[in-house]
Image: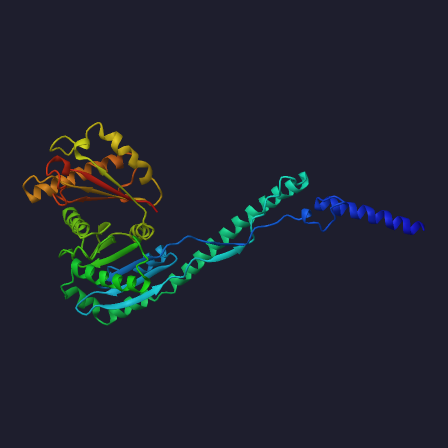
Length: 393
């Protein structure tokens, strides 16, 4: 009997401990619904990645030697990539689509206990909620890691080097140097490829469309319908003058490009990659600044009051990876050359203010448009405006 009594006493203690651990009373019972916290349905965690398109056009392997690195450095989920060879017989070198973001299923959020729950259940809920947040954070990190790994594997597996090498060994590089390939030709070639991708994908790219064009010259004027809403990055075979580069940018913007950049052959792969990334992410903030607020009539020097107008642009331009395109416009001074120089000088004044307040010159693109795109309501001072488009990754 003594042994039995001792056994019963231990059983009672064990039962009491179990009851305390589960937060229920003896009356409720260990299996009572009140002793268990409910959880919501499991959730699917993935990265938010919108589809994008990057179309590269090469004309000879030498100027595009950094293209494989740029593609690898800028790769993102759901990216449609196409690389084309320009020339008298243009051809597709590569087409591929990156994998979608990874997904992880995580347990549902603990459901809050009702108002009549015991203090123990309320404490247990708070503890479970803390653990759940930690698990969700870990799941998101896992998604990011797996997404980066899959995207990197895709990019490094692309046979870009081999395709460019085959182009060079087949004599196409020499052919491209002698063919009359121009900015217009490559824009048309890229636009045709984009149309094909959009037809296949159902026009899903939105504004996340980038043309990376390696051109032997900046000749020709692209058709306005070819570049509507596209980010265009041009790398020339020979260093362009500042005036020539600005004229090329103006051509591209007038043809509908959302942003246009003209770089010489000395541009680094990192500089090109930064521009490509901004275009693929595409978040544009546009500010139109009145010329009469910024400048004296006919002047290109900023007025003292311009500080209040330009200062709000500093914060978004300081965001990591942000790019600002400063577009200057004239108001028909009567001479095309003078109009261009005037519009460019006003854009340069704005750029110098931003640089003086810590914005690196490498994050700014300055373009003079002359008297193009005049406001129909007023062909005078209202047209001497400056438009700043800021791409925030």
